[in-house]
Length: 286
Image (cartoon, rainbow, N blue to C red; front, side):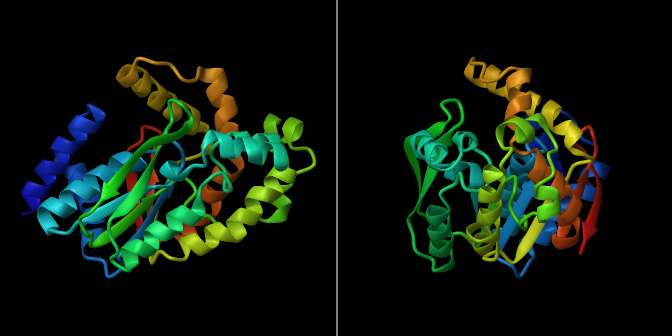
């Protein structure tokens, strides 16, 4: 069966990335992840990692091949789909801090709805009505996804999943122009850090296994996110952000991402080390 799974993964990678991966690479790095998830006693699993690192691609491969070869259905949820609407973020930006108009940091998601959907999975209560966020419009879509079939495993994918609150010494240190110029009183930072400490911690604690995709450093995020932008342009024939706009956008994510790189390797059950070319270079099991 191993050869069949490896061939299937190889084909999936080719379709999703337009690149060919050696079967030795797949056997060494991707197959063990799939096997670990399929045979885990934990039925709720988090996957986190920086923007553009490859979480969605990995999740698609896991979902398809666990279903095909292990006969287990995975319900995949994305933290991105639970972003607050543009109107809700506008209210937040006026009430608390202007930077909250930009989606991304803790506090810009509908955690209540996401928690309810996770509990519905736990209690086997279907259908689950999953929201959809339209990144082209930067707003919640009117469409919803109705999940009827019961799943064996729930996987939540999101950039900051599993992240603990940031220590104050680092939280209050200005690490980029955005923090220095637009959050000098640290209102924005304190707001999202309190969210990490409370609502998000409660959410993450619902999960029994945590997987972290670790980038070499934050420096690669801009290029990886730029690749995503180019793919969106190809797919939708519409440009969203140029490189300058992207740099400003990801600066909202910088502090938490750098903190994740530092602390999550000790907290995650599986650490997937990614190199600058977005390939796995090592797997660490804690």
